Length: 220
Length: 220
DNA sequence: CAGTCTTCTCAGCCGCCTCTCAGGCGGGCA
DNA sequence: TGCCCGCCTGAGAGGCGGCTGAGAAGACTG
Image (cartoon, rainbow over all chains, first blue to last red):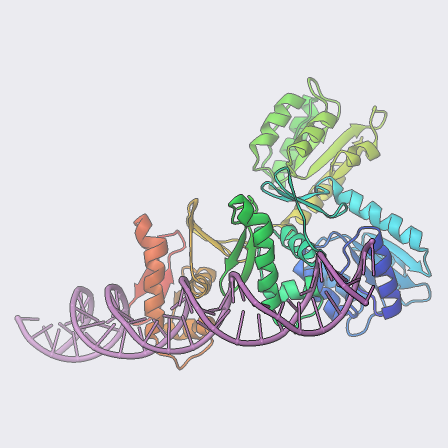
């Protein structure tokens, strides 16, 4: 979600998290564009009036880069741009402020559903599965208990399975900071290994020295 | 393209081939499903009303097998199924007969474009491949393990394959310095040769005496 | 308020990676 | 044929990235 009004952004984040969504925030256009480029998002909620880089330009830029992540645009009704502009730019849907929270969620679900056919609700990597909605993780048919932080880390790695993910990226998305000691990531990867790999003789969580970590898509 | 009306299928095939697409035909659902399972298709055009196995079931079956090839569904407007059904099944787009040929091509291009964005760029030189996102290198289908420095060097050489690249350029781009002893480049080229060339009897990493190195684009 | 769980910091250890060095090889040229 | 210079390579030292056990501080629960 790219939204510069912090109170509104925080409120929507809480609400959506309660619905079971995982929400990353960006507070200006530059940051939003940067995060969207990382990929891994099912949908982007994009305000038009933003500091540094307008939502208009964020959308234009993403589409120019052939990034087709679904985008739901938000705008004040007295804004410079209107719905036709938004859709012309490659947005997938459009809401005018003030909007109803319920309507926002409904539109989001519609956008997600549109993509749902291609994306399984449960993340998997080999026989390792993670269900974001139910907060459950299993190796084969054996349940694995994880703490919230461990779960968030594993979810992020599974969404990007087979890719090498740097500690900086992990800190940004899982810890929501970037200037923390990266050692905390090493510690938590260690915890995960002891829970989802070691007891099963697996090696799905691989260290890529100097680059980050990779979760093997075939489960290690 | 899975379409049982032979005249229509042949006409579309000719038209699409003229646009530069390579088109395989199937005339019933069983055959279509069988061919789609072979993989290697960028998009499937799938009629709903088909002999032996309906497009509805072909789509359902493919998704159940976690085959996420983009599917464009075609149907008669008076058909038993409507657009919502098609999309719910995991189709990516939907056209109602009669449709305009121009619209079909536009939709196909949209689907292809969407997938291009989510597919990571992989560098290749002959049967040598390097995936920057996954940090993986393979000669043919054999994985090759590289250290970070080796990987960075090979990536740079592959991005400029077939060109002669001087040691100074390599130092600048891979080591980020220019006043280092160029011998380190020689050492690392040697390491790479032992990992990606020698075990396979290849000679992709060529020395151009007095000028630098060249990575043969056909893989050596 | 006690007990438990979770998160995070810290410091020490380990092993791989990086780079240097020196000797060897061979192509080109006089 | 013999020399020079550019390139190759084996050996080894040192550094640094990553792992882990211990424990402190904070959050939650009953």
